[in-house]
Amino acid sequence: LVGVQGVTASNVDALNALVADATAKGIDVLDPNRIPDLAKMQSLANIVAHAGERAVYEPSLDDLYVLELQNLSTDQLNNIITVITLSVDDGSGINSVAKLQSRVDAVNTVFAAELSDLAQPIEDDYRLIGIKGTQSVGVERVNALTASVRANGAAVGAVSDLQGLVNI
Image (cartoon, rainbow, N blue to C red):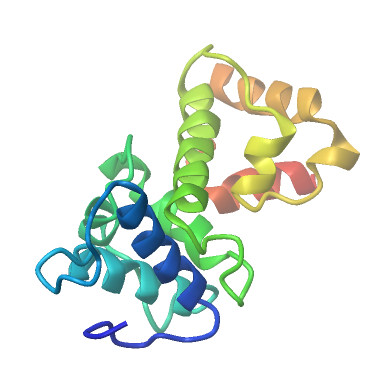
Protein backbone atom coordinates (compact mmCIF):
# COMPACT_ATOMS: atom_id res chain seq x y z
CA LEU A 1 0.00 0.00 0.00
CA VAL A 2 2.09 2.79 -1.39
CA GLY A 3 2.08 6.02 0.60
CA VAL A 4 0.58 4.61 3.81
CA GLN A 5 2.95 4.68 6.76
CA GLY A 6 2.91 2.14 9.58
CA VAL A 7 1.33 -0.78 7.73
CA THR A 8 1.45 -3.80 10.04
CA ALA A 9 0.01 -7.28 10.18
CA SER A 10 -2.74 -5.89 12.43
CA ASN A 11 -3.94 -3.25 9.99
CA VAL A 12 -3.17 -4.55 6.51
CA ASP A 13 -6.48 -6.44 6.29
CA ALA A 14 -8.39 -3.27 7.18
CA LEU A 15 -6.54 -1.34 4.49
CA ASN A 16 -7.11 -4.09 1.93
CA ALA A 17 -10.81 -3.96 2.83
CA LEU A 18 -10.87 -0.26 1.93
CA VAL A 19 -9.32 -1.10 -1.45
CA ALA A 20 -11.82 -3.94 -1.96
CA ASP A 21 -14.69 -1.61 -1.10
CA ALA A 22 -13.44 0.88 -3.68
CA THR A 23 -13.17 -1.91 -6.26
CA ALA A 24 -16.73 -3.01 -5.48
CA LYS A 25 -17.85 0.56 -6.16
CA GLY A 26 -16.23 0.40 -9.61
CA ILE A 27 -13.14 2.44 -8.76
CA ASP A 28 -10.08 1.40 -10.74
CA VAL A 29 -7.60 0.97 -7.91
CA LEU A 30 -4.75 0.46 -10.38
CA ASP A 31 -5.13 4.09 -11.43
CA PRO A 32 -3.02 6.06 -8.90
CA ASN A 33 -5.47 8.94 -9.16
CA ARG A 34 -8.35 6.67 -8.12
CA ILE A 35 -6.85 4.87 -5.11
CA PRO A 36 -9.04 5.17 -2.00
CA ASP A 37 -8.28 8.42 -0.25
CA LEU A 38 -4.78 8.19 1.20
CA ALA A 39 -5.78 10.21 4.28
CA LYS A 40 -8.58 7.72 4.99
CA MET A 41 -6.20 4.80 4.67
CA GLN A 42 -3.56 6.48 6.85
CA SER A 43 -6.10 7.30 9.55
CA LEU A 44 -7.35 3.71 9.69
CA ALA A 45 -3.77 2.38 9.69
CA ASN A 46 -2.86 4.62 12.64
CA ILE A 47 -5.95 3.78 14.67
CA VAL A 48 -5.63 0.02 14.23
CA ALA A 49 -1.85 -0.08 14.65
CA HIS A 50 -2.05 1.79 17.95
CA ALA A 51 -5.02 0.03 19.54
CA GLY A 52 -4.41 -0.15 23.26
CA GLU A 53 -1.69 2.53 23.09
CA ARG A 54 -3.45 5.78 23.99
CA ALA A 55 -0.20 7.25 25.34
CA VAL A 56 1.42 6.68 21.91
CA TYR A 57 -1.39 7.74 19.59
CA GLU A 58 -4.77 9.26 20.31
CA PRO A 59 -7.12 9.61 17.34
CA SER A 60 -8.62 13.03 16.83
CA LEU A 61 -12.12 13.95 15.70
CA ASP A 62 -10.58 14.71 12.28
CA ASP A 63 -9.12 11.17 12.12
CA LEU A 64 -12.60 9.81 12.69
CA TYR A 65 -14.26 12.21 10.22
CA VAL A 66 -11.78 11.17 7.52
CA LEU A 67 -13.10 7.62 7.90
CA GLU A 68 -16.60 8.96 7.21
CA LEU A 69 -17.92 7.61 10.50
CA GLN A 70 -21.47 8.71 11.17
CA ASN A 71 -23.00 10.34 14.25
CA LEU A 72 -19.73 11.60 15.68
CA SER A 73 -20.24 13.97 18.58
CA THR A 74 -17.65 16.26 20.09
CA ASP A 75 -19.51 15.68 23.39
CA GLN A 76 -18.72 11.97 23.17
CA LEU A 77 -15.26 12.24 21.59
CA ASN A 78 -13.41 11.30 24.79
CA ASN A 79 -15.61 8.22 25.27
CA ILE A 80 -15.17 7.22 21.62
CA ILE A 81 -11.38 7.58 21.87
CA THR A 82 -11.39 5.64 25.16
CA VAL A 83 -13.33 2.81 23.54
CA ILE A 84 -10.96 2.74 20.54
CA THR A 85 -7.82 2.80 22.65
CA LEU A 86 -9.14 0.18 25.08
CA SER A 87 -9.72 -2.19 22.18
CA VAL A 88 -7.78 -5.43 22.01
CA ASP A 89 -4.10 -4.60 21.52
CA ASP A 90 -3.96 -6.43 18.18
CA GLY A 91 -6.58 -4.05 16.80
CA SER A 92 -8.93 -6.86 15.80
CA GLY A 93 -11.90 -5.17 17.46
CA ILE A 94 -11.50 -2.01 15.41
CA ASN A 95 -9.81 -3.16 12.22
CA SER A 96 -12.51 -1.94 9.86
CA VAL A 97 -14.58 1.16 9.39
CA ALA A 98 -17.69 -0.93 10.16
CA LYS A 99 -16.24 -2.08 13.50
CA LEU A 100 -15.29 1.47 14.41
CA GLN A 101 -18.78 2.63 13.47
CA SER A 102 -20.34 -0.04 15.69
CA ARG A 103 -18.36 1.32 18.64
CA VAL A 104 -19.35 4.92 17.88
CA ASP A 105 -22.98 3.79 17.71
CA ALA A 106 -22.67 1.91 21.01
CA VAL A 107 -21.15 4.95 22.76
CA ASN A 108 -23.99 7.09 21.45
CA THR A 109 -26.61 4.55 22.54
CA VAL A 110 -25.20 4.10 26.04
CA PHE A 111 -24.59 7.76 26.77
CA ALA A 112 -27.73 9.07 25.04
CA ALA A 113 -29.74 6.72 27.25
CA GLU A 114 -27.80 8.11 30.20
CA LEU A 115 -29.05 11.61 29.36
CA SER A 116 -32.69 10.77 28.74
CA ASP A 117 -35.29 8.05 28.79
CA LEU A 118 -34.45 6.86 25.29
CA ALA A 119 -34.25 3.19 24.40
CA GLN A 120 -32.05 1.43 26.90
CA PRO A 121 -28.69 -0.08 25.94
CA ILE A 122 -28.42 -3.82 25.47
CA GLU A 123 -25.61 -6.20 26.46
CA ASP A 124 -23.88 -5.78 23.09
CA ASP A 125 -23.73 -1.98 23.47
CA TYR A 126 -21.90 -2.35 26.77
CA ARG A 127 -19.60 -5.05 25.35
CA LEU A 128 -18.69 -2.86 22.36
CA ILE A 129 -17.61 0.00 24.59
CA GLY A 130 -15.55 -2.32 26.80
CA ILE A 131 -17.71 -2.42 29.91
CA LYS A 132 -17.05 -5.65 31.76
CA GLY A 133 -19.41 -7.41 34.15
CA THR A 134 -22.76 -6.40 32.70
CA GLN A 135 -23.61 -10.01 32.02
CA SER A 136 -23.11 -11.05 35.64
CA VAL A 137 -24.78 -7.92 37.05
CA GLY A 138 -27.51 -7.91 34.42
CA VAL A 139 -28.16 -5.26 31.78
CA GLU A 140 -31.48 -4.29 33.36
CA ARG A 141 -29.69 -3.66 36.67
CA VAL A 142 -27.01 -1.54 34.97
CA ASN A 143 -29.67 0.47 33.16
CA ALA A 144 -31.59 0.92 36.43
CA LEU A 145 -28.42 2.07 38.24
CA THR A 146 -27.63 4.68 35.59
CA ALA A 147 -31.25 5.87 35.67
CA SER A 148 -31.05 6.16 39.46
CA VAL A 149 -27.84 8.18 39.27
CA ARG A 150 -29.47 10.45 36.65
CA ALA A 151 -32.62 10.84 38.79
CA ASN A 152 -30.43 12.06 41.65
CA GLY A 153 -29.03 14.84 39.47
CA ALA A 154 -25.70 13.23 38.62
CA ALA A 155 -24.42 11.67 35.45
CA VAL A 156 -22.36 8.71 34.38
CA GLY A 157 -20.63 10.62 31.62
CA ALA A 158 -17.51 8.58 30.99
CA VAL A 159 -16.67 4.96 30.24
CA SER A 160 -14.65 4.78 33.47
CA ASP A 161 -17.62 6.12 35.49
CA LEU A 162 -19.88 3.50 33.98
CA GLN A 163 -17.40 0.69 34.67
CA GLY A 164 -17.13 1.90 38.27
CA LEU A 165 -20.91 1.75 38.61
CA VAL A 166 -21.00 -1.80 37.23
CA ASN A 167 -18.24 -2.82 39.66
CA ILE A 168 -20.23 -1.71 42.73
